Length: 159
Image (cartoon, rainbow, N blue to C red; front, side):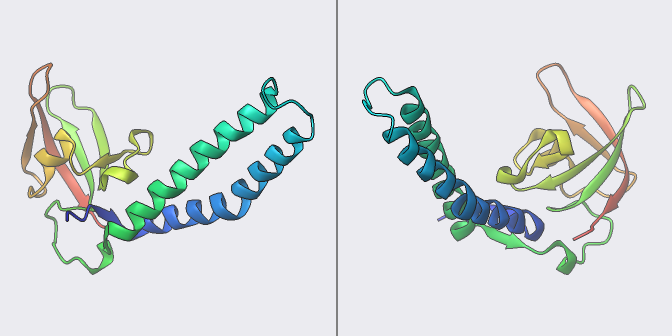
């Protein structure tokens, strides 16, 4: 069975979310369902159907989080000693060769990926191009719009 990687920080964030869903959201939705039932006929009760739909989404998310946390390989970035080589958990500072635009990408597990926070999945094309490289190396990302070249400026591990 494959064990998807996740950072220790990412695993902790998922545990916090799971606890909140179980201790706060689940009781709130249960109360919403009970309140909606008191309004009578359930066939035409929009509040009841909305609360049941919320409950379904909530239970699905709880199952997903529990599955991820039970199977994931938690990687403590602070324990890695890789120097300036890019591996899982690295914050990689790059400069696009063509435009000179600078960016930072943190390479994380698929479940943690969030492009708005510059967290990219290890399975993404950019991450795959960066893995194994070092400062001053050139990484070529193959994209449908053509290849993009990135110069690696810095690599950091912040656990």
